[in-house]
Amino acid sequence: MGRFDGRKGGPGKPFGGEDFNLEQMEKETEEMLKMRFLDKKNSEFKATGGGFVSLKIGDEEYSRVQVVRMFPFTDPDHYISIRTSDENSKEIGIIKDLGDVPKETRELLIAQMNMRYFTPVITKIINIKDEYGYAYFDVVTDRGECRFTINMGGSSVVHLSETRILILDVDENRFEIPDVMKLSAGERKKLDLFL
Image: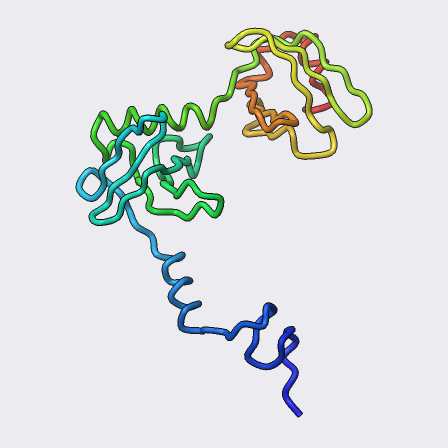
């Protein structure tokens, strides 16, 4: 009688029934845990025709990469993760400091991050209506008037500090209130539910 190891497929077989390859798994794990730092000496970034960014590191070429801040609110110019653009999005490398890359590259990467982290600043709250588990915001931002909806049940309002708030709407757009104390007393009263 074979030993039961709790997996479908019996001893030595994972859930799908294929043979388990420990050596391959260890190699993949080592690749995932390996951290590679990118700078002006080992990497070359270029703008693509479609408005994206490509990357060349030695013999490796990536026709399109994602540029992601690891600490977008507390340290936006350090530890920039460069990732593949496919649905599995694997990390290619990290830029420790945007000062470690040439000026043209820095401007290119900042432009990509500005698109990714587009966050209008709310300067005035006209109205907030709470109804059926949703809050409907009517506001003025530094980009103009805006209406958006948030889910009251989720983590739609994030307190970045005692006075700084980040709001995520149902479409995952971001809005920021840098200092709630700069809003009028009436505007803060409308925000009471979220403070």
